[in-house]
Length: 106
Image 1 (cartoon, rainbow, N blue to C red):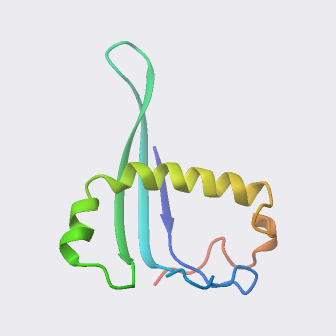
Image 2: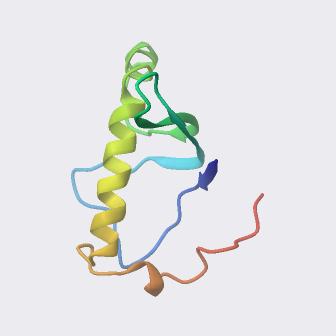
């Protein structure tokens, strides 16, 4: 089983972009558990727990509507973002970001 807890950080090398609203992530936790389906194929059970302020002006009913379908898209987007960061596509690599490991939790 793997548990990953994420929260927003600010880094001047990744500035906000004009015309975009950046969400504030207070806690985003993924819990992943390997398993096998009935055919014996490897699968992963995934649970997402999120406390995010998406900022901007979006009606609550719309946020709640997409809360049911968005997690699968978030997982895919997160995976792509990790690959892009690892490849240096953001102009910074993970080892260049100070203070992101073993930070004290509030």
